Image (cartoon, rainbow, N blue to C red):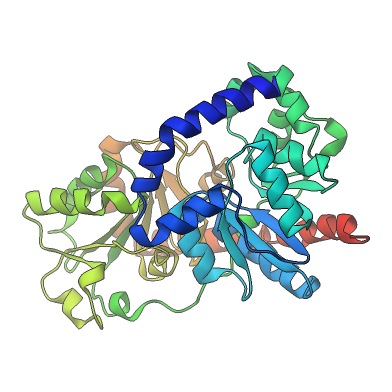
Length: 414
């Protein structure tokens, strides 16, 4: 089965290689090319952490900081797949971290990489199940740990169809540190060894966020709605709900942060087509010009959203209305902000705790405008919801400590 997988994967790489290369900025093409082909910096001893994109990189930061303190003589390698993940990794990871693209999942390339960087351990964030990566690491006598593991119901259904293969892939992982009992149960149902599966909790609750709100948004007057990590179709929906409330609440502002940078121009054109005064974050200097007539701010920068939630009166979670699975609601929870979600938060089952305790509000697209109005009309309710969100965040923030204890057990003699 591995031979069939490797053949299909290699054919896919050959077909997609040129488009993937050309879609990247010229400045990144050389780095992407050589690292995908396995040419990584040489280091004497390393700890390799893989985090596919921005969300996983942010979740890994508390763990990376602890690893840096516990193993100062080790070089941290942080691999990602996306360009946005690369940027956040370079900006936020501990000093000295080597940030690379994950090489292609081809055995000969990966074996060359492991021989060159000689990691003492390979840590996979969440559920990045690259079969040859896991098999090659195990074959090189490198312990493999999954940390912050999660698996959606949709993914588990798909994996169960090929459980005969996944059971073999899982055999190369030493321990699975899952976010919840639900995630653990799904993984075991696919074929993971029950003795290898642990509940460590969700590292995203251990995020280290800045307490400083950016100057440009700190100068806004009036209530502010922040719509974070939005997906196609959601921006128009949220803008419409905002416009239905703008006359009722003087000074009401909307910050829209599309999930993908390649959609910034598309969203800008949509806002302009509605005749709504707006400004792009990239065009803002010190901040005073933001309040001069702009009702909407398009957050067309990467890595700033978590701090922008600090000024939010309400936070709307993207990919929960027209997408599937939702985006991470913990950044507004950290700031103690009331949270509005659409009907699709499947990737974050812990959101049910927020709903049940009144820290977040689930709605459908048709009721978005009315839930915004109801909350803005009830400041005490918004404050109580925000306080409860922060309380839930604080009481779940221990996953990084449990993860580092597990890692220490495998690093003792390496």
